[in-house]
Length: 465
Ligand code: UDX
Ligand code: ADP
Image (cartoon, rainbow, N blue to C red; front, side):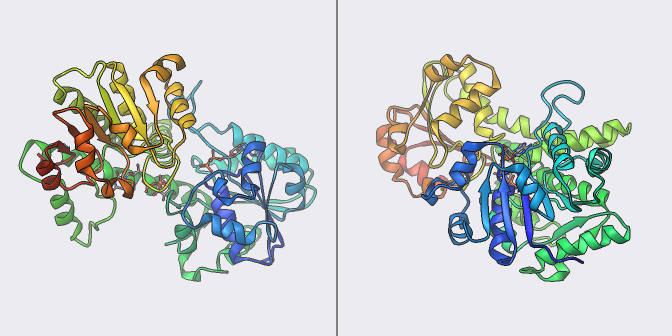
């Protein structure tokens, strides 16, 4: 094992930013440099007002405030940081491909490849390269091949160290990780590299929680962990549809099955559908890999998790349309929440985008309030779908900063994100503000049915008749 003095992380996003901040906090003797090609993002990481950091995570600004300028640095000087560091984390984005072979399923590795080529070009001393982005199995091999064949003759050890942090709880997940997975070559130098990375995490985590595997197991475990979690959400969402047709209540069913210690209670909350940058992407990746090995049944099995999730979003939108007398044309529908879950400003793959799209197809007018998501993000999410022109999206959609402005004269409210503040609203006042009959479609099951009924709302709760 070798002690490390300087770390560099390429990619100052949702993964790179919080992960490096936590490493810097726990390893004061290590200098951590986070680099990105996006100048605007780096400027925000360096902004003196910590409320303007590009990523919102509870507890993050405190850690950045404590470490920035001491042993945590943000810059766009990618080459310099690579050259100086002994260990390089790659945390660039790996979106699903939108073109060519594997379109819509495979991960787009162009950013990773560019990174690897850059490291090869710049590095003049031996480096440990850690893949932190979610990558399809066997990517480490591709990175190694690029580094070894285009490098300056220095030695590269490639490790896979998948990130299991969930957004909204990133800092806590990093500080108290259930497990850290480190995959590397089963050679002497590979073992040394794994121990070196393990040493970093041992600064704050017990050694038993740090698991070492071969590279392929580590890469595959990340995809499989997310596929299993997403599968639980799709399973309970499938049950929610059944509950709505019967007298069963999905929360009671979840509780009843979750008490079985073999099943466990987590990830059994029925919702309008899972979102986020990982679940769908990782499952599509798993599906793509299975197909590429001719494992059709395996691919179909996992694809069903996505099909069920799409069905849930569509079902929610269809229910709004049919309940509002089969037409939402010109009707004002208020969306509470746009983020894919509470406590984050991330909207990637958020169910709200797809539900809004379905309602806009029916010419609804949507007024959106989310405590953390900007107007610019909401418009760009819809523009990105390409269903309508940007002008049309701006005509049909309004984004407001005051939650009471959103419900004024609305026909219905759709709760898309489980923000705590929504529970605390004065729902009587909201009822007064709306057109009658006033509908609430609770896609997150956050409100009390009896209370909503007693106020006079026509209240629909996902998973309950
Ligand atoms: C996930 C994994 O949890 C994390 O380990 C991995 O590193 C990245 O992907 P994240 O996408 O941040 O994290 O959020 P997560 O809390 O897992 O939620 C994903 C989606 O599932 C959200 O839209 C959430 O609202 C939804 N969900 C989650 C449910 O609908 N019901 C549940 O019971 C749990
Ligand atoms: P994630 O959720 O995986 O962290 P993000 O999109 O939030 O993904 O962050 C990835 C970051 O990586 C972006 O800020 C992007 O600008 C940066 N990035 C992509 N390619 C490179 C590169 N070659 N060099 C430096 N930064 C890069």
